[in-house]
Length: 212
Image (cartoon, helix red, strand yellow):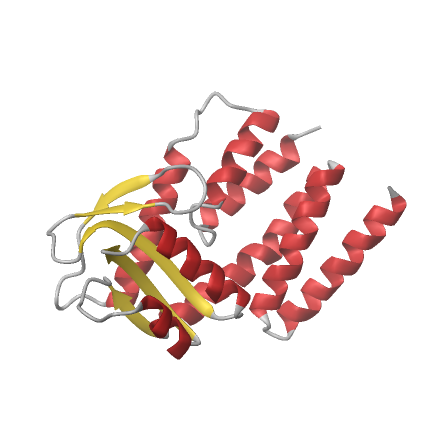
């Protein structure tokens, strides 16, 4: 146990240094390593503490992404999301038909591996439809109905609002009677739906601290 705690402390020291240097992607990467180790060891109090710098790193990732290129919908003829990704270091992408949830997951994975500040959403509709079904592409099946952005609407703010709605929908699925490990596992799985949702981080931390 002592060796494991030393390993956790080493990883989180690296995460803290990365956060201080504003290397948010490295901080996130180190926090995720520490989370997995803490969960495996049953160190739920430590797990809860890790979520704080992780939440901050992810918040900064989203801020950086929304300051980049915003691509709402991918149904235009000739649009290639992988070419778009290659050209961006930071940005937000909403994939629509003919692209799929599998494409969205692949784009997000490529972005993380390439250490880019990229956020991805998937709508299970054609781009020109008047109402969109925003759907998860990682974790449990979660969806919510949203309106596409109006012509005069700020696209970055629309994207942020859409991510919040998806995260709220994921959180609303959780049975309010759950406690302990069951609540923890339900929250942890739904954080995968949209990893930047701040309330999910906070509720997950509370659930982790409740485990004895």
